[in-house]
Length: 360
Image (cartoon, rainbow, N blue to C red):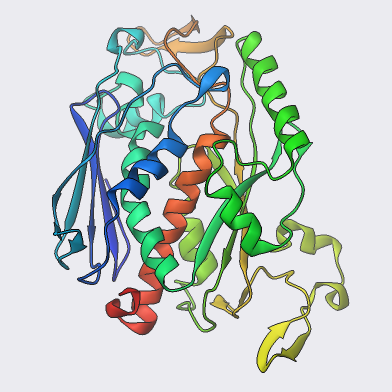
């Protein structure tokens, strides 16, 4: 399996949903970066389930940093974080009866039955906790360089949020929100849609919109390591992300060139664009404007409605009724995963462009 991502700054993920521990190793970080364990805890809390709109499986995530940090600073050697799994109910999962929408069947095809099927094993969203832990270190390093990342729920079950406004204010506000909708009325309506789906054993999806401010112009490695290409590669690794678009995205198909192009001008001695339809990227390279993209997050595939499946032992049709604890929506928990993955990718791209010590 390909469990390592990145060139100058790389991340390796390991563990299974119901195994003893999950974790990540991040390599290539500059020495001397501050590691704020309280901030790591905060980021993990944004991913943790909360109330009726989330699963009842709540892990406290008492992480351990076992290498790469000394006296609160990175040493420059591989940094490893471990997070125990303490709240598992493996009996809720049945081998040989794949859940629709999950990787149960495809994992069986690839690993010939030797995979850990409990809770989705290595394919579970549980593994993203390790991404969030190491991503917190990357987010902190970027902030020290004036680069900020934030994600809100652009829409959920057809309920829209307002668009980004004053970016600095919105990004700061989002970093402290458990449910990341910018409009309070939209937030209430979205929560209502999640609860309605949960009441009938179903689930909902939506769209996350992410903005990155403060990136310098000139970052990106065309042809095949463009900013869009590398970000999309990593974002599609997040469970349930099924679409990624940058700037106007598919909306470009309905525009003329005169509408789609972002005119250039000088503002306070700096070259900027009058609009940002291209999401801060031209030719796969950052242009100094905010990088903006959206991720489509599918409804949680674990639902309590009766579904068609197959018995892989007898190769006969079967009916599946799930047991266990599942989210009626994961989009609000996935946003901090998107922020974390984005930060890790940007650290890698910036290190390639300016050298590893740029982050220090």
